[in-house]
Length: 199
Image (cartoon, rainbow, N blue to C red):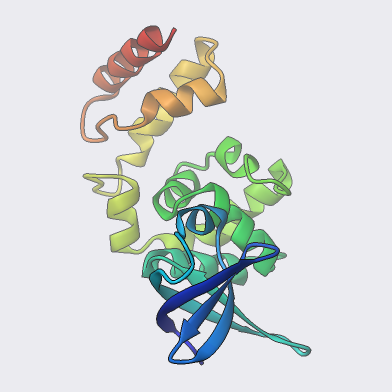
């Protein structure tokens, strides 16, 4: 099983694939869209964490820029009804910390921003991924300063902003970078300040 590759980019192929030359052997890897967009000119050296997916009719390699992204991909594959294409689509829209935060906070709107994910699928992903992604290194990156209770602060602020009439996109933007270890009232005040500045 291939878990990591380093080589030189030969070409970008159709359907989000790259061809990587590793010591004279060309490996085709499917990668998330943001990674594909950052791959430079042919000949650039690139190191990827790899998931080897074995099917009856093919062996497909999926490449990721970090071990976290690969672990998220594998957690998604283990979720009910999720295949490689949908798992890759999720990671093409959400970075690993964003995915973990959406799961911890049960933010269906964020998950529904992925093409092909409706509210029913998003709700199922929350249930399936909650236990798979709640590991210390993921949780700390997704919710800085988390002590296990902090996601409730964000959820309370999210609910309060929704009651005030703000939409999901506005709320999501307002919460970016705000502290999780402050009282709800203080975080809400900061979020309202962000929203006022944005308008």
